Amino acid sequence: MTVGKPSRLLTTSGRAVCRETSQARSVIDHDDPTVVDAFWAGCRRRMEAADPIENPRLSLRTYWFLGDTSKAAFAAMIGDDVRRLAADDRLPRLAHGPLHRRARHVLEDSGTVRWADKHDIFRAAATVVELHPAVFHGLLAGYHAVYGDLQPAEALTLLEHLRLPADAAGLAQLRTVLREGAKNHYDDPGLWNAR
Image (cartoon, rainbow, N blue to C red):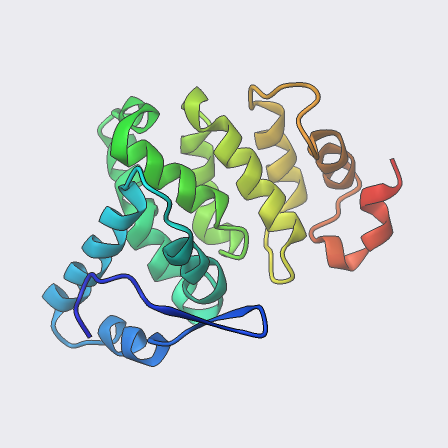
């Protein structure tokens, strides 16, 4: 496998399957940290690209951000950078350019990342107005994904501080379900439509 090269996807009966999953996993578990760093550097560059990047994003949502790889993948894709920027009081760097694109994509796709591993990143991103839609979509994904993860009270506090259009699709429903203490759509599917 070429390190940093996006995974190829095969489509079978409308379902995308990562063909290189086991190879990618062997990179992450590699003994040489330079190999791991090179792999994530390639993934980060791809998420910063201006052109469409659906395949790598699909790989994040369906493989990397699930289970035992989610913490490391989220940290490598955006978490470590946001924590460094926050510590240096440089979060405004997330407002534009390649780093903004990467942060936007990763936040939107991070619904299945454990709340404990992402809540500080969401809070930091919420201080950058240009990332408010991405934080919102990340919260929506955390609620709607089968394996989504969020803490309703913390997510509601975060949601209330975002500057979003009042008629943003899903905003009123998300507020309602979070106020009800719902952690996931699949715990009570009817709650989303009850409003």
